[in-house]
Image 1 (tube, helix red, strand yellow):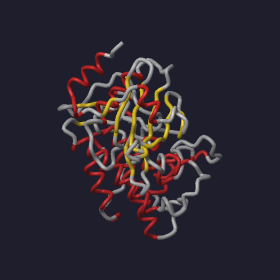
Image 2 (tube, helix red, strand yellow):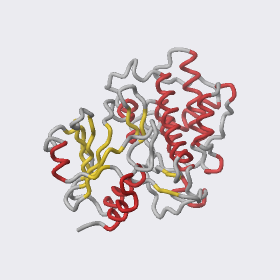
Image 3 (cartoon, one colour):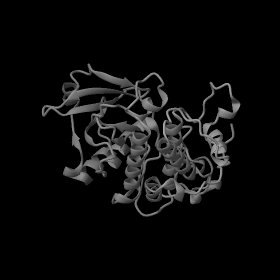
Image 4 (cartoon, helix red, strand yellow):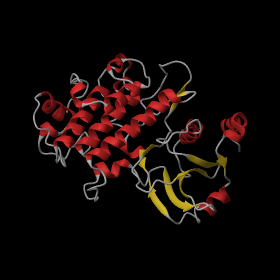
Length: 323
């Protein structure tokens, strides 16, 4: 049975749409799904090369997917097809049938940013020095700024997190996974019926409209939470810690920042490292301000990332979360 949304989409976009593959094509490209890169609750990812030698990653949705994933799949195809930016992952093709749903992306050899932040066993020395972390933050900010201002239609990602940032061979970051994205042609405020996103990165206004309407500032909040994790080298909520003051990392580091104490961050070797870390923390806190109106736009975030530390003001402490 043909999905009317898919047919409408293909008819509307015509040759501008990514290439549509059949089930047999996907099976052939993935060599019968032999080289698996990883597996999640709703999909498996395989690596393979196209006939022209390009390595690709093929994300195949499991057949027993939850209700609504079909809509998320088409949403991802539609939204990511509208993008063309060095910091947005490229969608090369897709397959959509009753039995098989797959997305084909450019292959990112260094995987997701998450493993370099949260996996303490990985050998990242020299790869993600403070200068490189700063470059990655700038790249992600450029990608989000493009989604918010550079596209013909503004795109809100609404699931910004380390797992959804992929790194190429040069550690250039590319934003991926647009399954929860929303298009907002003109209005800056959108209607969202459910609190979409991932716990720990979701902006307060997605839970309660008392904090303001849902806009591009929701992505700014998620970006800020991610930047704080990049600096801390850990998840923002660490239930395994024995020190209750360190349970919620943003509160702990905000207190140290306001008291101008040594930030006590892992891997800070020089005054330049310390300046980068402090700048990223300050920007992260501006991004996670409780009310959207107090958060900067991604354009402003980019400016803040480029200027010297001395020009940045210390933001007020966000009050929405407590350990």
